[in-house]
Amino acid sequence: MRRASGRAVRHRGERAILREMPTRGDTPIRGRDPSWPAARSGPPVLPGDDPRSIAIAAERLRAGGLVVFPTETVYGLGANALDPRAVARIFAAKERPAFDPLIVHLADASAVGTYAETEDAEDPRVVRLAARFWPGPLTLVLRKRAVVPGIVTAGLPTVGLRVPDHPVARALVRAAGVPVAAPSANRFGHISPTRAAHVVAGLGSRVDLVLDGGPCRVGVESTVVLLAGGRAALLRPGGLAVEAIEAEIGHLEVLVDGAPGTAELAPGRAGGHYAPRVPLEIGDPLDPESAPAFAVRPGERVGLLAASAAGRDAAEAAGGPFAAVEVLDADGDLVGAAARLFDALHALQDAGLSRIVAEPVPDVGLGRAVMDRLRRAAHDSRAVNR
Ligand code: TXA
Ligand code: MG
Image 1 (cartoon, rainbow, N blue to C red):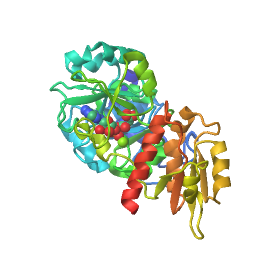
Image 2: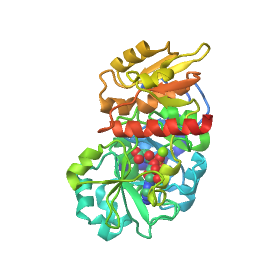
Image 3: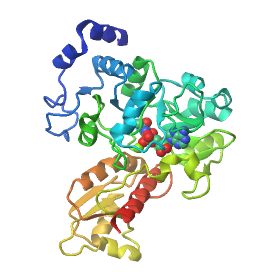
Image 4: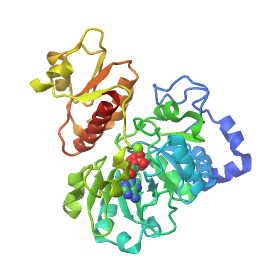
């Protein structure tokens, strides 16, 4: 199928196919995403499940272009990882600081040894995690081979590798025939996108093409684990529970922000996270100490990010009325909460609020990724607003 569509593109030309294919810019197609904005400008947005889209996007990647594609975690802003000029365009489009390395996406685990040192690629823990969790929301940071350009790893001796679990992402990487460097497809410091509409609103025509795969299933970024130089450390909690990883390979060190060595090993933690335009604070409606957070002063428009329906009811009993309410998961399920987190933050950020109060979730399983993102958002909003 891939070869057939590849032939079709060469034979008929990309422009002709783009003209013929319904794109999001012209008409809302297939009704997959009701939140699609009416804007007519912006990049072509093609349906990810059409093999012609994959062929066009793969060609764009090989030609040095920027292609946004869905993964199971969040949308990625992809470029050919072996083309330093293309990778430089990622940093420019995102306005991302050059010290923050990118994850390289592979079609399958067999390519690990091409990009990582043999000793790390053959480390039994790496082999085990790859076999158990790839494709999936896990990034392994291993010592890199020389073939990986320094710009991809921000000059670090290690590279983050991941096999995404999304049919569009895998078809694209396979069809491109090159590894794909891709950070989340948001501007630096903004909320990660879990829908194509978020990408178009945030990056617009800074990208060459967007593949629409509908909403992302996992909804938070991959869990990043360092397995290099004899270490085993959690660099970022994410869409794969730490407990599941530890059940396979034993205890992971947890790096503490600000501790010696953390910034060198995990540069992304220094500042590559969501800094809300609207101040956000974490408050537990059942904790009297949080009462001021739930008290709405006259003229204030406060948004509530509740972990569950019960949390919403408790918050409404503790204070309010709230101008906008988002419930992460009615039953308080943590997988459901992670899946809704960025969507809910996008909605609250666009609701014209003075501030957001967010209910904490338990710090276990995927709750760890949710709390990590909320704490960083709260920390940054203090820095920005006080
Ligand atoms: O789920 C995901 O991981 C998404 C999708 C698109 O794959 N990607 C993503 O990329 O979240 P980004 O760039 O937004 O976050 C990648 C994180 C950054 O915090 C970065 O610092 C860290 O991974 N990272 C990448 N390579 C690294 C390396 N060699 N050493 C330490 N940290 C690394
Ligand atoms: Mg990111």
